[in-house]
Image (cartoon, rainbow, N blue to C red; front, side):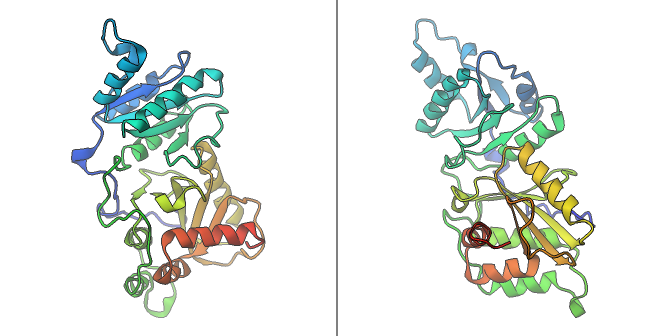
Length: 312
């Protein structure tokens, strides 16, 4: 977060509850890909990992082995590279979906994200040589509610927050409206959750470009899932390029497609088209005010349409 480091109340992290957190993960990957870093990172988070070749079913064919492997898994993690060997991974992902399993995709190297943009499957790009990147990604994956489970106060489609906007705006503003309240992250996260978003989670540690990661059915296929959000108290003209570049790099590193910048105030001119076309932006009070009568999905789509059709 720019200009301030804020503590996030524990209630803001609205991912899967501890009792439904995945305890086992099936790893699907091309035969030539080393998945040891993924396995180690998951096991450090208390998740047991295994693959199809570790299932001992003598005399069984591949579909039978896969069915048994998927049955034992709470989560299926697919590691995809840019080679034809990943075609088998696509098949296993389809198998997992048919069995109603929670699936997440990790993209390596130049593996295209276009295959996953409208799939509804969370996908991230990571670099095995940067453990902190993988740790962040897996932390977010483990917070996504399993299929059939809705996070508290969530619905499939987002909705306006109505009069709650007044309460949140009051929390955001201080007498004289001269500076933001110290709980900017909490207020924005609460507004998004109140609109019915499935999952809102805070980036753990100093992420450099992302304060919140948001999953919602209403975001796909418009901007993809998750939508990273960076919060900025004061957006100065001298800092504008650096803030946008930091968010853009965070989006690219994780294979995301769009980002949202929400700021309290700005002396930078954001009325002209910026050089980062996949970053949407809006003042914090306008964001909450729009949520009064619009759903979160409609607000994001409106920002995207404004940019695509010539807006900033």
